[in-house]
Length: 122
Picture (cartoon, rainbow, N blue to C red):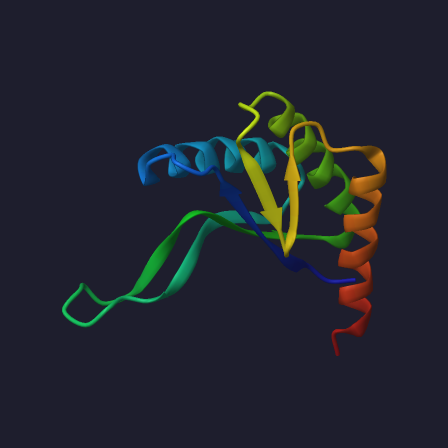
């Protein structure tokens, strides 16, 4: 199977955008230590009129390109990273939200959903 991608967003209510980006950057560094192809800041669309050309970075968002075989390792990194964060820090991965230590069952469920999504992709 060829490389695919997942969207990851760090969420923490009441935290300023700078701190959210710092948290996301720390998670990106941890993910890059895993065997992923690429991690980059996620985008939130096109810049509003009058702004510099290009896309707007979505605060706390990451876009991870990876081989399906490393998805389980990525979830282990996310779980470990979350366990070291304050209790109000959450991670949203393709619509699935996690907070604190992520259980083995939650990781398995997300990996299965990810692989199922890949099987449906033409």
